[in-house]
Image 1: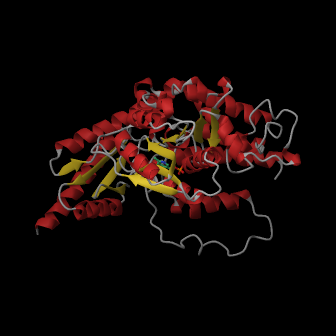
Image 2: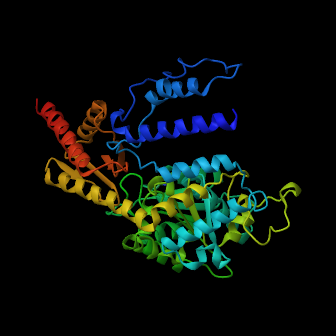
Image 3: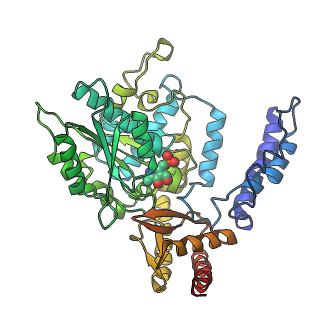
Length: 478
Ligand code: PLP
């Protein structure tokens, strides 16, 4: 393909994308396909001869799009949002065109420095203490591929520090902690790090308390184990509940060891979804009350900050812990300036890294912080509107509070009723939601996800839920 052909098809493609985005409401939310639908339609071998872009884009329309679950549909209320916006798409396009691999400053100076700048911008925007910023010379932010990666990287750094502090040669005595409502990525990280994980019961408000944590830690110390890592979740996946960060911080502060028996537990905050809201001053206390003991934190701008996947924003208070654990330095990667700046390969797992900060930079500049705050506040408002409709209907109960854009609820009575209700709603194709299990309750999660969801979509969603509840409950009576 030459430049002329690229210009022509590029412009057509932008039109195609804009039409698709603007017409998303006409698409089904969930496709009517079964496993294998695409595999059986595509050739089993790669084409030997070149094909035209027209033919390829035609197949996108005819074969690929019909198999899409449309996360941007205004009636998609499952999981958490998949961030998206035109500025972000343009940033991604530019990133592909620049085509660099940003593992070191020398390999990609602009890629490294823009990441530093943008992570400091965002860190300041969420009110982080100076320690966490690059400009402090101590900590800093880095873009990871996912929240799972951030949790793993912080656990690896914590384990490395514990090995050094306690002169360990194996991880058999190391223990990590989280609540039973923490995301499964904490369990995966513990399994990859080969350490024990205590999944502790949250309190009545569905958050892990400092007291529960303290008791678990003291018991483990008594049993000659070494507590080394805590993951506190601010905004759980099931119901967006918040662990009690101030009391967790207090507990960890009072559990600091002595020079003879050192105890230095790493505190990571996983706020993959809710953390995006900390750009609004009114939500910042949820992070900042208790930040004193936090070593690292993360949220996914690709969830709720209008930025396409992948864009996992992670900050550490002391970058040396990451670099100490994750540095590699073969001759072919060395450069003359490596002690003057960040080489992000030493802050994460992969060597090669995308120029992720470019799309985030486009997004922050095009919307401004006020535009991003407006987006968060609007989705919170819509969730509150949904909550009012829910609370008026005595057949339902809400589980937990409405936090951010998520409302979790069930039909009063046996879990099976809510399970059946969700089944019929999703089968109707009118809405798409997913369930979660919270303290023996089967809950239906309603998350405001799409930027095109409006007041009337929320009212319509409630009518759909209410209509199907009539039928499920009527069947029950018969
Ligand atoms: N933590 C929380 C609280 C989440 O809700 C999620 C995903 O929704 C994750 C971690 C995992 O995120 P990722 O898919 O970026 O690994």
